[in-house]
Length: 388
Ligand SMILES: [Zn+2]
Image (cartoon, rainbow, N blue to C red; front, side):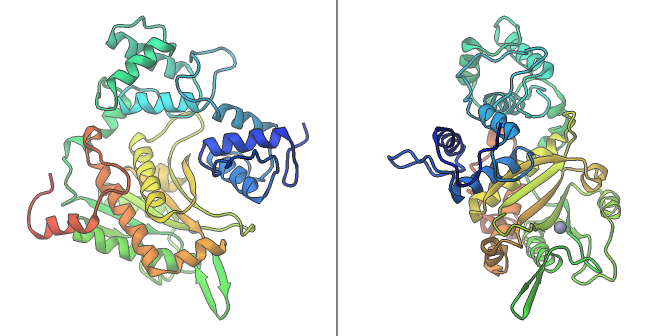
């Protein structure tokens, strides 16, 4: 199949745009159906490709088409089961996996593939609610899932074990240790963008952001350690940064970066946690990354480029929940205009504090994204009251 590309017109383009609008990557068409592959469509395709780990070329070839096909399924629209050898894939599978994980069932990673592990988790759920444990998710199982809502937490799978220590340690931030890792530094400036007589560097911007985050976390009673100063002599390798966090017994590790791309249209925020293609994942890392991503998107309006599993040294060697945040593209004129604004960096810092706080709320007491007032947290700590 010839890829569908910018400039193309026709019903296939309308279909692509409909799926992208359903994923909130494009504004819904007002009235008239648009059948033109315009620049907005291309941007949306790129964002979609990035979120699905596809090569980002802004065209819809066979692979991207399959991923779009999978994305159109909504949970409850079809019966899900473990099909061999071609497993069912789709957004509905991902939603189901997320629900199961939220409820404490070991569905593995929310990878949108209905594999044996998802099927087993469904069967366990079915047993516990008195349904036939066939591992398939049809109307009865969907009803049971809807009835139970988000509040129920059951089972003792890996996800709960991993997050047990965090949940039982209570919701307070006081006395936690957070290691903040401003990326690059020294001989490695990271992404560099000349701007008239100025020169913006990733290393400087993320160090400034790290300092803002440090101040806010410290004011909430957190012990904070940065992996580097503003102008280190050398660039510390990622393995050393991970070891530093391990040696400090950190509770949370946050690495800060900005992204860069030859295409100035590439923009948005993405977060990364430890995981492999085989479905091995740090569940607490994934949760923290999801919270950081959602809070930043809600509070800054940066494009949502999603949360992704990576086996990078920095994420693999750290023994605590660890995330790497790519806060916007320094090479994008729109992202850059925001990043160089100190007020914007303050908002990003507030978003990350809110995410770290939510990490310690039990799931059933979690609050909506964007709703934590960081200055309120500070006031509580200043008044000497324990946050509960
Ligand atoms: Zn970087």
